[in-house]
Length: 118
Length: 110
Image (cartoon, rainbow over all chains, first blue to last red; front, side, top):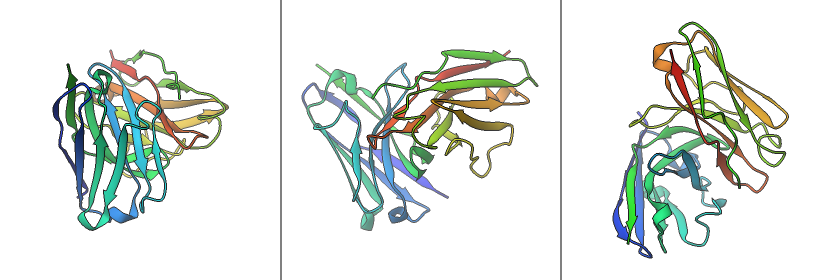
Protein backbone atom coordinates (compact mmCIF):
# COMPACT_ATOMS: atom_id res chain seq x y z
CA UNK A 1 0.00 0.00 0.00
CA UNK A 2 1.30 3.41 -0.98
CA UNK A 3 1.81 5.65 2.04
CA UNK A 4 3.00 9.22 2.34
CA UNK A 5 3.45 10.71 5.80
CA UNK A 6 4.26 14.38 6.27
CA UNK A 7 5.85 15.82 9.39
CA UNK A 8 7.60 18.95 10.58
CA UNK A 9 4.70 21.39 10.65
CA UNK A 10 4.08 23.75 13.50
CA UNK A 11 3.78 27.38 14.56
CA UNK A 12 6.54 29.73 13.47
CA UNK A 13 7.08 33.48 13.63
CA UNK A 14 6.94 35.65 10.54
CA UNK A 15 10.36 35.57 8.89
CA UNK A 16 11.20 32.23 10.46
CA UNK A 17 12.10 28.88 8.93
CA UNK A 18 10.71 25.37 8.99
CA UNK A 19 11.61 22.08 7.33
CA UNK A 20 8.90 19.70 6.26
CA UNK A 21 9.52 16.01 5.63
CA UNK A 22 7.54 13.39 3.76
CA UNK A 23 8.27 9.71 4.31
CA UNK A 24 7.22 7.34 1.55
CA UNK A 25 6.57 3.61 1.61
CA UNK A 26 4.85 0.93 -0.42
CA UNK A 27 6.23 1.92 -3.82
CA UNK A 28 9.43 2.55 -5.73
CA UNK A 29 10.09 6.08 -4.48
CA UNK A 30 12.95 6.83 -6.86
CA UNK A 31 10.70 5.98 -9.80
CA UNK A 32 8.39 8.94 -9.24
CA UNK A 33 8.42 12.70 -9.31
CA UNK A 34 7.21 14.23 -6.07
CA UNK A 35 5.46 17.47 -5.23
CA UNK A 36 4.26 19.73 -2.43
CA UNK A 37 0.73 21.15 -2.55
CA UNK A 38 -0.82 23.38 0.10
CA UNK A 39 -4.25 24.52 1.15
CA UNK A 40 -4.68 27.66 3.21
CA UNK A 41 -7.61 27.68 5.67
CA UNK A 42 -10.86 28.12 3.74
CA UNK A 43 -9.02 28.33 0.42
CA UNK A 44 -8.34 26.06 -2.53
CA UNK A 45 -5.40 23.88 -3.45
CA UNK A 46 -2.16 25.54 -4.51
CA UNK A 47 0.75 23.75 -6.17
CA UNK A 48 3.97 24.73 -4.36
CA UNK A 49 6.89 22.81 -5.80
CA UNK A 50 7.84 19.69 -7.70
CA UNK A 51 10.95 17.59 -8.22
CA UNK A 52 11.65 14.86 -10.77
CA UNK A 53 12.65 11.35 -9.72
CA UNK A 54 16.36 12.13 -9.76
CA UNK A 55 16.20 15.79 -8.77
CA UNK A 56 17.15 16.87 -12.27
CA UNK A 57 14.06 19.02 -12.76
CA UNK A 58 12.88 21.31 -9.98
CA UNK A 59 10.07 23.85 -10.15
CA UNK A 60 8.55 26.36 -7.75
CA UNK A 61 5.40 28.42 -7.71
CA UNK A 62 6.05 32.14 -8.10
CA UNK A 63 4.73 32.69 -4.57
CA UNK A 64 7.53 30.64 -2.95
CA UNK A 65 10.45 30.81 -5.37
CA UNK A 66 13.57 32.06 -3.67
CA UNK A 67 12.22 31.23 -0.18
CA UNK A 68 11.45 27.50 -0.36
CA UNK A 69 13.78 24.66 -1.38
CA UNK A 70 12.60 21.19 -2.33
CA UNK A 71 14.89 18.20 -2.01
CA UNK A 72 14.75 14.44 -1.80
CA UNK A 73 16.80 11.54 -0.51
CA UNK A 74 15.97 8.44 -2.53
CA UNK A 75 18.04 6.26 -0.20
CA UNK A 76 15.77 7.30 2.67
CA UNK A 77 12.55 7.37 0.62
CA UNK A 78 12.02 10.94 1.74
CA UNK A 79 10.99 14.29 0.32
CA UNK A 80 11.71 17.61 2.00
CA UNK A 81 10.64 21.23 1.84
CA UNK A 82 12.89 23.80 3.46
CA UNK A 83 10.86 26.94 4.04
CA UNK A 84 12.43 30.27 5.00
CA UNK A 85 11.37 33.92 5.22
CA UNK A 86 7.93 32.64 6.09
CA UNK A 87 4.95 34.94 5.73
CA UNK A 88 1.43 34.89 7.12
CA UNK A 89 0.16 33.84 3.69
CA UNK A 90 2.23 30.65 3.90
CA UNK A 91 -0.11 29.40 6.63
CA UNK A 92 -1.62 26.24 5.21
CA UNK A 93 -1.93 22.48 5.33
CA UNK A 94 0.99 21.14 3.33
CA UNK A 95 0.58 17.88 1.42
CA UNK A 96 3.22 15.83 -0.32
CA UNK A 97 2.00 14.03 -3.40
CA UNK A 98 3.32 11.47 -5.85
CA UNK A 99 2.93 12.18 -9.52
CA UNK A 100 2.07 9.79 -12.34
CA UNK A 101 2.04 12.44 -15.03
CA UNK A 102 2.42 16.19 -15.20
CA UNK A 103 0.33 17.72 -12.39
CA UNK A 104 -1.37 14.34 -11.88
CA UNK A 105 -0.99 13.32 -8.24
CA UNK A 106 -2.31 9.86 -7.53
CA UNK A 107 -1.21 9.52 -3.91
CA UNK A 108 -1.31 12.12 -1.17
CA UNK A 109 -0.36 12.26 2.47
CA UNK A 110 -2.70 13.55 5.15
CA UNK A 111 -0.83 16.83 5.36
CA UNK A 112 1.09 18.76 7.99
CA UNK A 113 -0.12 22.16 9.22
CA UNK A 114 2.10 25.21 9.11
CA UNK A 115 0.98 28.34 10.94
CA UNK A 116 2.93 31.57 10.52
CA UNK A 117 2.11 34.25 13.02
CA UNK A 118 3.61 37.44 14.28
CA UNK B 1 0.68 32.03 -12.79
CA UNK B 2 -3.04 32.79 -12.37
CA UNK B 3 -5.41 30.17 -11.04
CA UNK B 4 -7.61 28.39 -13.54
CA UNK B 5 -11.25 29.51 -13.52
CA UNK B 6 -13.92 27.18 -12.20
CA UNK B 7 -17.51 27.89 -11.18
CA UNK B 8 -17.77 28.33 -7.43
CA UNK B 9 -20.61 25.85 -7.15
CA UNK B 10 -22.73 23.42 -9.10
CA UNK B 11 -25.61 21.22 -8.03
CA UNK B 12 -27.64 18.33 -9.30
CA UNK B 13 -30.11 15.70 -8.19
CA UNK B 14 -29.26 12.03 -7.75
CA UNK B 15 -29.10 10.28 -11.10
CA UNK B 16 -28.54 13.45 -13.07
CA UNK B 17 -25.37 14.50 -14.88
CA UNK B 18 -23.36 17.62 -14.17
CA UNK B 19 -20.37 19.24 -15.84
CA UNK B 20 -17.72 21.40 -14.20
CA UNK B 21 -15.68 23.66 -16.44
CA UNK B 22 -12.07 24.73 -16.00
CA UNK B 23 -10.92 27.66 -18.10
CA UNK B 24 -7.29 28.59 -18.56
CA UNK B 25 -5.16 30.03 -21.32
CA UNK B 26 -3.03 28.91 -24.23
CA UNK B 27 -0.15 28.75 -21.75
CA UNK B 28 -1.70 26.08 -19.57
CA UNK B 29 -4.93 24.20 -20.36
CA UNK B 30 -4.67 24.92 -24.07
CA UNK B 31 -0.97 24.10 -24.33
CA UNK B 32 -0.83 20.43 -23.38
CA UNK B 33 -3.07 17.49 -22.60
CA UNK B 34 -1.99 17.66 -18.96
CA UNK B 35 -5.21 18.53 -17.17
CA UNK B 36 -6.20 16.63 -14.04
CA UNK B 37 -9.25 16.63 -11.81
CA UNK B 38 -9.39 15.98 -8.06
CA UNK B 39 -12.20 15.21 -5.67
CA UNK B 40 -11.69 16.60 -2.17
CA UNK B 41 -13.84 15.75 0.81
CA UNK B 42 -13.13 18.07 3.77
CA UNK B 43 -10.66 16.57 6.20
CA UNK B 44 -9.44 13.97 3.74
CA UNK B 45 -6.64 13.90 1.19
CA UNK B 46 -7.59 14.92 -2.37
CA UNK B 47 -8.28 12.05 -4.76
CA UNK B 48 -7.20 11.97 -8.40
CA UNK B 49 -10.24 11.35 -10.60
CA UNK B 50 -8.99 12.20 -14.10
CA UNK B 51 -5.50 12.81 -15.49
CA UNK B 52 -4.12 13.78 -18.89
CA UNK B 53 -7.53 15.29 -19.77
CA UNK B 54 -9.53 12.09 -20.00
CA UNK B 55 -7.73 9.17 -18.33
CA UNK B 56 -9.27 7.53 -15.27
CA UNK B 57 -6.97 6.02 -12.64
CA UNK B 58 -7.65 2.45 -11.66
CA UNK B 59 -10.56 2.25 -9.24
CA UNK B 60 -12.28 5.47 -10.27
CA UNK B 61 -15.86 5.00 -11.39
CA UNK B 62 -16.58 5.33 -15.11
CA UNK B 63 -19.29 7.81 -14.14
CA UNK B 64 -16.45 10.35 -14.14
CA UNK B 65 -15.16 11.56 -17.49
CA UNK B 66 -12.99 14.41 -18.72
CA UNK B 67 -12.60 16.36 -21.94
CA UNK B 68 -10.99 19.49 -23.31
CA UNK B 69 -11.69 22.00 -26.03
CA UNK B 70 -9.24 24.81 -26.60
CA UNK B 71 -8.46 26.51 -23.31
CA UNK B 72 -11.35 24.92 -21.41
CA UNK B 73 -11.41 21.50 -19.81
CA UNK B 74 -14.49 19.82 -18.39
CA UNK B 75 -15.32 17.15 -15.84
CA UNK B 76 -18.62 15.35 -16.26
CA UNK B 77 -20.18 13.22 -13.56
CA UNK B 78 -23.06 11.07 -14.69
CA UNK B 79 -25.55 9.21 -12.52
CA UNK B 80 -24.92 11.61 -9.65
CA UNK B 81 -24.72 9.97 -6.22
CA UNK B 82 -24.81 11.42 -2.72
CA UNK B 83 -21.17 10.48 -2.12
CA UNK B 84 -20.11 12.61 -5.08
CA UNK B 85 -20.80 15.72 -2.99
CA UNK B 86 -17.37 17.28 -2.51
CA UNK B 87 -15.05 20.00 -3.75
CA UNK B 88 -13.56 19.46 -7.19
CA UNK B 89 -10.35 21.00 -8.47
CA UNK B 90 -8.77 21.01 -11.89
CA UNK B 91 -5.04 21.41 -12.42
CA UNK B 92 -2.81 21.96 -15.41
CA UNK B 93 0.84 21.91 -16.36
CA UNK B 94 2.02 25.17 -17.89
CA UNK B 95 4.46 26.25 -20.59
CA UNK B 96 6.63 27.68 -17.81
CA UNK B 97 6.99 24.10 -16.47
CA UNK B 98 4.91 25.02 -13.42
CA UNK B 99 1.65 23.77 -12.01
CA UNK B 100 -1.60 25.61 -11.48
CA UNK B 101 -4.88 24.63 -9.84
CA UNK B 102 -8.36 25.96 -10.36
CA UNK B 103 -10.14 27.78 -7.57
CA UNK B 104 -12.34 24.77 -6.84
CA UNK B 105 -16.01 23.96 -7.35
CA UNK B 106 -18.35 22.84 -4.59
CA UNK B 107 -20.68 20.14 -5.84
CA UNK B 108 -23.96 19.80 -3.98
CA UNK B 109 -26.15 16.75 -4.52
CA UNK B 110 -29.71 17.89 -3.88
